[in-house]
Length: 307
Ligand SMILES: Nc1ncnc2c1ncn2[C@@H]1O[C@H](COP(=O)(O)OP(=O)(O)O)[C@@H](O)[C@H]1O
Ligand SMILES: [Mg+2]
Image: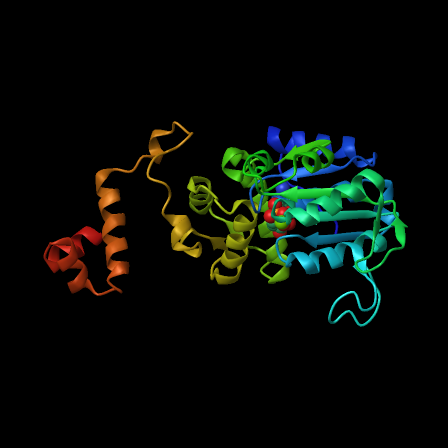
């Protein structure tokens, strides 16, 4: 699938500019940003815009695999290199020869593995595990991490020399909450995607629904937004997606307006009280008597406060 990075905030425009400037060179790129900000998508876009697009493109998630297995996946192994190595296996570096390799969550790589990776980057050569034949490859490396590698270096978890090798160009993708002006476009994009997938051609997000999405902080970034839209498209029973189609968490915006200075984002005490009463009622499993007791009010008052 063709990656299509959506957004026109200054941050995304900068990212896209950098992508097109680095794509044509074989320079190693380090993509940083919180989980769900689109790091993998940026890596895919770099490859698509590079002459290597017609060559193999492989991906490894360094956090998902134990370190021995990771080394074997990267460098391959010879038959009998370890228990279970019943035949020779080529690693990703070999299979990606002439193309590109994406190392995701590189901040989680064990330090022994980091040392081996550094050698490949410096000398473009390595041996398969259990082998002594030196293999030379031509691979363009793109790495990503949600960690702050400079801090990992201070903590002794990441090799400084490897960091400078990887970080020839860094592309940082800011969290969605710092570029809320992208939310509108992203919502349109995902609604269009899922409208088609779930065959609901006329579906759109209502004004009030969009306001709810704009009031939320998106700790899970674009991934979370996409999931919320997919869920809402599936659940929606009318032609419009309303706030009610979003999970409870999304509908309870942060208490203070944060960066925006719009006074209409500030709740009145009555609104706050109603939200709190609903929360307690939820905690009480919907039992109004129990909720009233917890709130130290009588059940009749509870009913009026729920509004
Ligand atoms: N700018 C964007 N435009 C469109 N989709 C995006 C964008 N950023 C992220 N996504 C989508 O969000 C999800 C998470 O993106 P991904 O690249 O896997 O993030 P990360 O690798 O940073 O965790 C994917 O489904 C991706 O397609
Ligand atoms: Mg990722």
